[in-house]
Image 1 (cartoon, rainbow, N blue to C red):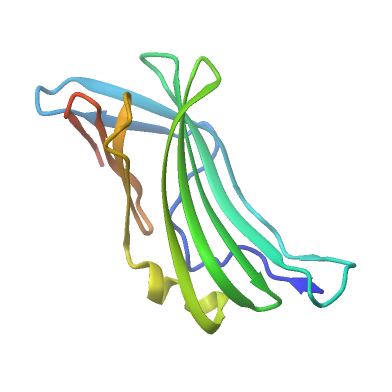
Image 2 (image 1 turned 180 degrees about the vertical axis):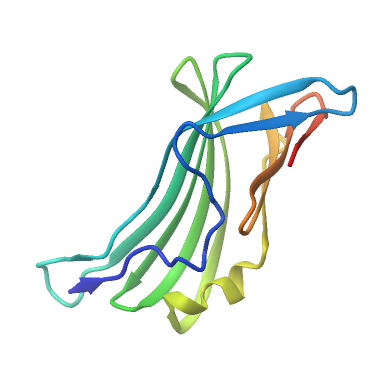
Length: 162
């Protein structure tokens, strides 16, 4: 089965390795995130039967400069051939390289949804939230901009400086 690459029109993570992202809070405190890895899956051929599923993803890993936190965000698409069945968006927060907490949303797609039409169902803004988190409760990602803000457990919102 031929499986497509991650769709280029779903550019929620427009980053490159070693890119620095600066965020400020309402008190003008700064926090710097450094992109340590950014990758989109390529097209591939799966030698299994036509019943096999295809998986396509895009992700980035960013390290907070001021502490030992890491943020990993990933968009996963599952489908069969050129048709997608569902999209999952994950955010993982790690401290000292150990998983601490997660954020996620899932979107079920209509039947016969091609990879090129997924953006019609995701929208421009992805909000990953988990009120029970003890480090980061909310992450906001905007198409073609990437991470635009995050909110820590103490309610402080950090906004991207563009």
